[in-house]
Amino acid sequence: MKILIADDDPQIVRALTLTLAAVGYEIATAADGAEALRAAIDEHPDVVMVDLGMPNVDGIGVIQGLRGWSNIPVLVVSGRAGASDKVEALDAGADDYITKPFAMDELLARLRALTRRTAPVADEPAVVFGEIRVDFAAKSVVRVPDQVIRLTPTEWRILEILVRNPGRLVTREDILTRIWGPTHANDGGYLRLYVSQLRKKLEAVPTRPRHIETVQGMGYRFIPENRPR
Figure 1 (cartoon, rainbow, N blue to C red):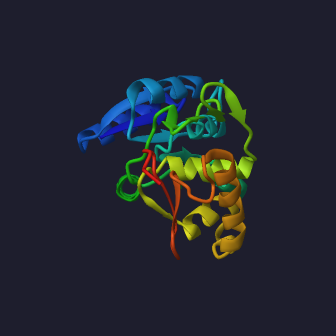
Figure 2 (figure 1 turned 45 degrees about the vertical axis):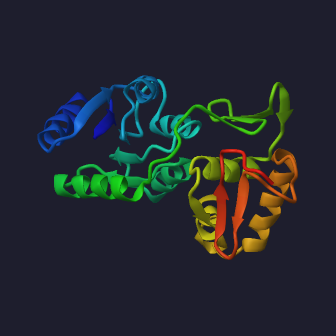
């Protein structure tokens, strides 16, 4: 398993590299945010550990850049202990947050937890299904060959969650919590409205969807291949 360590403190990077390599992880490193984004593409890491206070592109920018095309687990490792910093990082798409200084045992436990609970997902820069091309890097949706389909930010986030998990059930509660927070975990009617709008924009026959499938009473599933109606 490969970990990308993105931190501009060479002592921290050296200590983490030695410790994590000793327990079997393969390590890649980046000294600033721009380098981290390039390394994420070139190195194909299984987890990214990112500091918030990096030059060129800061940690929040790195997280947002990654989330434009990937669901790779992101662990923030930062000296910033304020609640607002943690909230900003998690809202940007980080999966976990640990504050410096930290116990190495805790860091290793958090890495194990991240890799256990993060199922393999589609990390391609773009996905094509039917006549639709979803470009994660550009955050665009096109009906082939060149008809741009305009989605609202919320429609885009729902589509991305589903397409990143092809063939897997994604529960209503999971989608609602990830987009609107835990206080909206039971707002199923609101979600149905957005899914209906997505089908009208993406499905050839919205009332008989091929790709955005309802799992009755549970949630939704993205079916990438075409199936006979």
